Length: 363
Image (tube, rainbow, N blue to C red; front, side):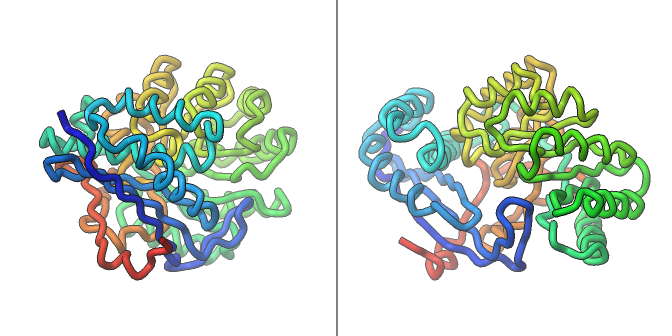
């Protein structure tokens, strides 16, 4: 039995290397990192984390420190499913989503990291293992970049080994989005994998118009065209827009994914391991998507999410984000000719530089 002895949350605010922009959040100059370190009675440690784009990290940290620590301490760390349900029902009335689910996600990731380390296995092999080389794309957060700067950024990502690119859409005029997508398609050439992301900007009817306007540019998918709770609207966009749709980064429970998938509202379920309920929920969504013959993609936390896709036969692309977390971890993710190489270190392999993070600690 691996008894939980210590649960240690951390909360940090990290300035971005450059200001990012999308249609919903506007300009983003920093993100919040909330970590949790779980140590068992033998001293083995698992690490989990979640993040925000600048707000609400305090609520996540408080949930970990005030609610999860007393519930989890002393429990058997190997009983991950039981612990997950214990936390879900303990926090259900005041939670079910939002900061509560982000806190559970970080804790669940730490438990899986601990379990894999104790087993001496990389996480993807503990989860079953499929293929350590995972197709990936560079996820640009670049709505406000001029076209020449957008193309320059793309060239930089190609030089890093990426062989698929995502760009932001959702500008004030649809004609501007079309102009930018056309410029990107011309720059990349025919057949190069290109995705676009609207960050929930549009109404259903505008999303359908946009999807049809993008038809000449051979997109892999149109991502988050409308707000996440409109399941029927998603189904209309998929049905009438003529484009594959990726969605799910703002779905925070398995039930939300079930509704989206079973309604026909998504082509590429897009799961964020740091906000959906952790590894435990992620793999349930992966299996549900497989049952519906849907390819799986991810949002954020690529250093951890790569393990999930490396164990999923229905994986498509791993999103690699530009938040700059690699400045604070050893051995950042390696990209080789369009594939992310899943690390073979025990656990998920993310090792924070705690001393370097200490100067950025909020509490």
